[in-house]
Amino acid sequence: MARATSHFVCQSCGTTHGKWSGRCDSCGEWNAIVEESTEATIPKGVSRAGGKAVAFTSLDGAPDERPRRMTGLAELDRVCGGGLVPGSALLVGGDPGIGKSTLLLQAAALLARSGVRVAYISGEEAVDQIRLRAARLGLADTPVDVASATNIRDILAALDTGDAAEIAIIDSIQTMYADSLDSAPGTVAQVRTCAQELIRVAKRRGLTVILVGHVTKEGSIAGPRVLEHMVDAVLYFEGERANQFRLLRAVKNRFGATDEIGVFEMTDAGLAEVENPSELFLAGHSDTTSGSAVFAGIEGTRPLLVEIQALVAPTPLGTPRRAVVGWDSSRLAMIIAVLQTRCGLNLGAHDVYLNVAGGLRVGEPAADLAVAAALVSAHLEQPLPPRTVVFGEIGLGGEVRAVGQPDARLREAEKLGFENALTPPRGKAGKAAKSALNVGEIARLRDLFDLFDSTPQRGNLATV
Image (cartoon, rainbow, N blue to C red; front, side):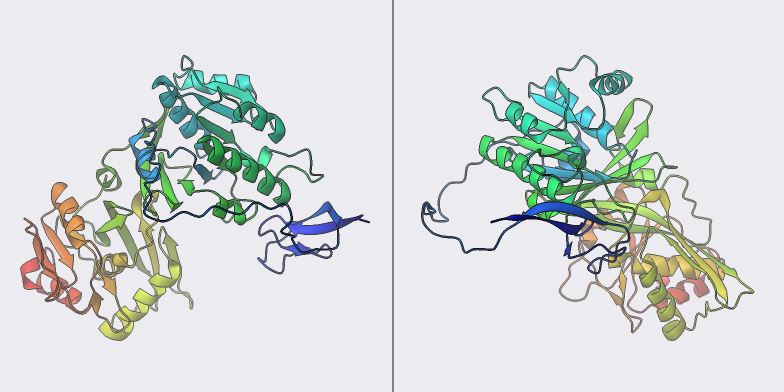
């Protein structure tokens, strides 16, 4: 006979504990363990009685390729891989107040205007609050079906009908609850159960479900990690509160490229798409300022130019500061060590500040050479050659390694009017495409100092 027991489950990673403790042993999160009641039974094996054999098919069959639904927001469609796939489930996460609900309400309104039936279900706001936001955005006249509900049984009954909506937005999954469970909304069991039921309906009816997820203080989506494995795509909406720019980044996508980004600008009328983000991130860049380098990066399938700023200042303290915004601090420490060991540039008595302008976070190793160029420029107080882009990976031996898609980076720089480029050597295998840029190849990091030494004020890439 089953007996009622209690389990203590970490709300961050989903690990079950036998008793309560202040810190989870698995993920290290503090005050995340919550008591959840359940029915404990003796585990038994699964019998084959009553089971239906799975039907297998071959790989040469024609797949059911239903057309994607375009949202009308080109940046959102780009991140999704070219539109919303019928029968898919998307998870959108972001900090509170960053604009998740605004973005999805704008997408829902554009879809509804194109003839797609959209259901917007909010568990955090009343219908009148959603109407106020729609009126502020100028979307009050769009035929979007709006409801305020949290019971997953009622929501499934509304979505699993013949005339149900084609796209359902659930804002947010942490507010939904299943009345068959005793735990509170937002717990691991509730989030997992509600998400699984919604995904099951989406796969069976060809419905596109968009789930809004809360994030923890570390920036990851709250709730069990299995939630990100259950959905087809995970999108993060990023940005600084003091900055009007917002980035929509895909970290998982079964129907498109990962690490794809979409750029938006927060205005009084909602989120506006940014068609040329490179020009946006380079606004205010000056060629005459030391410690500044323009990095030609790749975000997903899109080339993107961004300014990397460095400041090197003497310090009387025994331990100098290393402050980084928008880049990996451990990689900055590696670049400083390579500059000191292989090039003789000693920054041990200097504070180093590094910033990626525009609120973008750069993660690819191709930014190593741009960071090194900004550091050398700041230390020597000499600007880089005017209208120059830089990219390349730096090894521990001081060598500059080749990176992927160099031609796409150079084309983007040429399109924005740049004249010079500092790149790794192509080698015999790589053939450089025709470019109007004056390309200088740097094989060793020490060659970067020769550029500054040869022309104290304005360098000439032909000398590299």
